[in-house]
Amino acid sequence: MKTLIQTLREGIIPEDLKEIAKNEHIEVEKLAENILKGESVVIGYRTKRGPKVIGKGTRVKVNANIGTSTLRSSLKEEKEKLHTALRAKTDAVMDLSLSDDLREIRKMVLSESTVPVGTVPIYEAATLARIKRGAVVRLDTEEFFDVIERQLEEGVDFITVHAGVIKKLIDRYGKGKRLGGVVSRGGAITAAYIKSTGQENPLYEQYDRLLDIAKKYDAVLSLGDGLRPGAIYDAGDMFEVGEQEVLGELQQRALRRGVMSMIEGPGHVPLHLVKPAVERIKKLTHNAPLYLLGPVVTDVAPGYDHITSAIGASMAAWAGADFICYVTPSEHLGLPTKEDVHEGVIAARIAAHVADIARGFPNADNWDNELSKARKALDWDRQIELAIDPERAREMRKERSGEGPCTMCGEYCVFLILGD
Image 1 (spheres, helix red, strand yellow):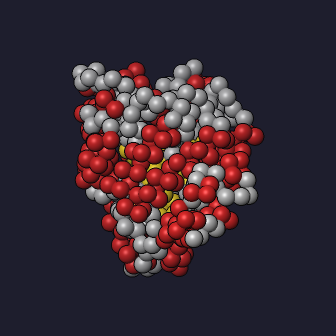
Image 2 (image 1 turned 45 degrees about the vertical axis):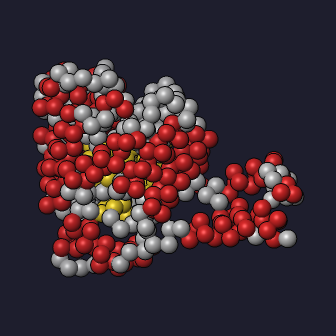
Image 3 (image 1 turned 180 degrees about the vertical axis):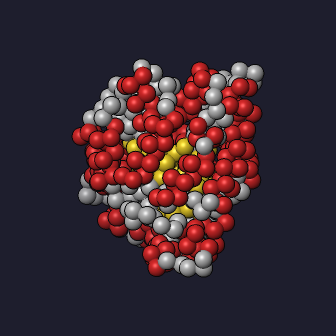
């Protein structure tokens, strides 16, 4: 089977790509050009699970992470979180489960999701290492690659691979000053494997093998930021930038082989460094699609990190980031509930829409203009219909104002005054 990139290189534009381009409000020829340059990818293309374009010329997309931990695992709760994220209109979901029953969780997500699904295969490989060999860092290379292929065979659309966490960088770790340490789970497991065995990261050492598997399933590689900063103090340090240089090399190798890939980014970044960080990553990685976690712009707001990340995400997306991974209120505190998932998706969607307006995405502000018209006309039903979270808006109006005039201004409502 030829990959989408290989097909486009032959001058053939598939019919289903034309429909995807139409939904993304971009000319299909331009979309094809962006994919061929490695500046856009299509997640969900192979499985036809609500395919989305990530990258140049399209609106900013949002991802929602769900998944179990070793301390809390419930298929019922994960199903509720999945459907909560879908109702809140996430563009993609990732299953980050770490529990022993993670395959059952993933099977449910793949079966019920209507948007592209991503995973982090090292989590399953580490879980097998813990069960079979007593420690998550006792990875077995053959087992790891078997996990990757099995997940793609099951229908996973994109996978995070921490191929940029290499021995050269880990050997230097400790010589630089890092306040937050290595906060990526996949990055920490990989770094510990390198330090404990003295061997190279198998995903880097056998990257061509990884590309062979991705090519076979036309899956998108999300090149993970295993050394991302987990404290604003660490933003832009030698480890983060060093990894990004490696990711730029890996992105080009994937493109040459006909494999779509995107770049993951930080993390924790103070507001004034967000734009320079995005510009640096884009330059180092050849303007590949950029998938950011947040970034969180201050470390002092546990319980409100859906807000700190939305602030960072709007700035980052304005500067050129293409895909935002939500952060929930329970980040740094505990496994998210379905309510946290809802809050996280809505906050990230707000940030993405703000950025679409700032980036001048065609007609992005039409939505705002229509709501403003309804607000001026005191058309409450239309306002609620147009709200990014209609259910929340409806409940709040009912609780605060009932069916009558808004209790914020009462008889001093500017639209009543000016209307009279």
